[in-house]
Amino acid sequence: MTTTPLIGVINAGSSSVKAAVFAGEDRVLSCVVEGIGQRPAARAKDSGGNAIPPAALDPAPATPGEAAALLLPWLRALRPLQAIGHRVVHGGAHHARPERVTPALLAELAALVPLAPLHEPHNLAPIHAIAALDPALPQIACFDTAFHRSMPPVNQAFAIPAAMEADGIRRYGFHGLSYEYIASALPAGLREGRVVVAHLGNGASACAMQGGVSVATTMGFTALDGLPMGTRSGAIDPGVVLHLIQARGMSADQVQDLLYKRSGLLGLSGGISSDMRDLLASGEPRAGFAVDFFCLAVARAIASLAVTLGGLDGIVFTAGIGEHAAPVRARVLGHLAWLGIALDAAANDAHGPRISRADSAVQAWVLPTDEERMIARHTAALAFS
Image (cartoon, rainbow, N blue to C red; front, top):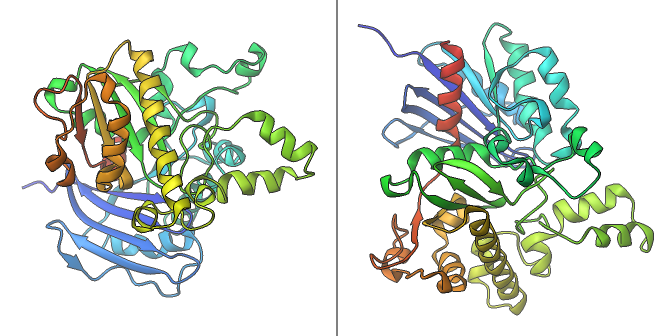
């Protein structure tokens, strides 16, 4: 009897790390470490979704790299891993598919840190930590930008001098691993159709797909563009940035801190919260304003992306807000009722999966995303090739 090789997955954020082990399509272990750098805590599940003892956090990790080092022995407790895959947010102009990690690749990715300061350093730290512990273990970098390289040139360009585009200043798009998974999970009637997927979480974006392939997306050169997010501004008049620097005397670092960490839902709500759950539960007018702004921005993005598709067959909501915030979905689709969308309120309250009525001109769905599974697929494909 042969034993299915095991693939490890690390999906690192700034203060959390999601880890998993896959045997083929089966998730056999999963662990989440949260509160890194403050009060780290871990929880874990087995293949049946039952709680099991998580990795021991001793000493308490102060960084995602330290957390990954503690997770590695736990991930391979069953038996050795064939390889381990990582989510890397930005792949830049030269990395359009998953790749085996090498020192040269790490050097290239380190140069992209300024383009994804909230993500890239924390994606790379676990790779370095695991390489130090086990240099022989193959590691695979899976890029969030890769899925969008299929976009037509007109949807990758900015209206700036062409020479700058040749230097790599273009629309890359992000959340690609999530979108790629959703493309693989679309209902049969939508797989070849025109679909807009709204990945709505602390980071938020939307993607237009035709036949499961990215055609256009809201995020751009960085993961700051497009929809408003938990603490990120999303799209903003570039003149505002110039004004902050020239008239207000803010430094580039101060503007970066403002747009990445103090804007979005947090800024719109007057500092109440960056968490949609808190805003929906609040009776404060500014909380309601933030929710209204967000829902309208998502609807406008979906309508704009429908133009790039020449029509619309379906809308899919995914990620934390998209999967769990029924009021947000209802408001977004309410703004889009002119498209002939007929919401099934009871199905929406039950979180789907289909939340549009049978007579709706455009289907609406709620589909859970699974970035870790997508990373495992890519990692297995490279490790076993």
